[in-house]
Image (cartoon, rainbow, N blue to C red):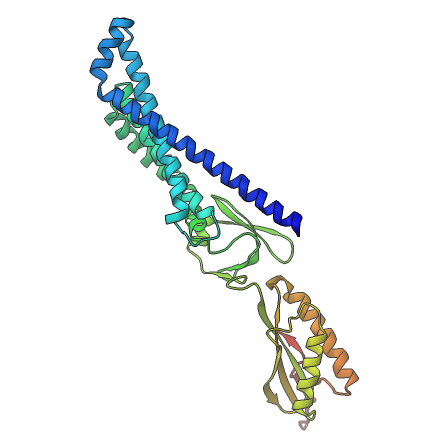
Length: 332
């Protein structure tokens, strides 16, 4: 216990020291940025001084200072966004992935703006034509990469919204069901019950109805249907089925299992056994084990499962016509 306590304190101290160092670096960069701002505001006097010291060097030095100002300003703004986002963007979210994605996107835009600022104010290059050309290129690329960009932005939306995570069991439009293995910018990979990997584009998931079987809780309900001879007392059958459920593996006792009578057809009574498992992935194993326990408990109690009923119709000058109905125990 003491080692664990000291270990936690050591980790907290390390994080505190790291945060203090990061804060110190931000303060230093802010001070340097303020000094550069003052120098650039007085660039006329600085240029004259440089011309006296090293003739012909004023333009180069001023350009370097402008580049440094834009870079430091972008770096400081990006760092502030990264430090501010945990407090103001999703402050109650335990998953930092959303904040990181948003801060990375904003940081990218900040550095892009700094790049254009350097071109215009440090290198004295016209950026209007570059922006116009960039817009045309962006339109062409957007048309050519329409599906890829749709997957990309859908991936960003999925990562921010976070409707499911790696390890969750999901169903996409009732066609693809499995456990989420990976979520990247382009596609989501799930592994179905056969062990096969299904790759679904993010744009398709964004437009589909997705059922997450692992939220809000990983525990998931399931049920099986058992057909018992209607001559057996319902209370006795219920107790036997509950006993079978409690002896089955992968079945939770809380919430407790339940047995209800679904229907009565002729000499057959259909019972629905409802129960919970710890994870959606355990349902097939739990159903199989439960059916085995039901067969064992029903046989030990001397009860009988309902058998298919056969009706024989004898028609004059014709063969008997036979039909079967009411199959026993079936899964849901």
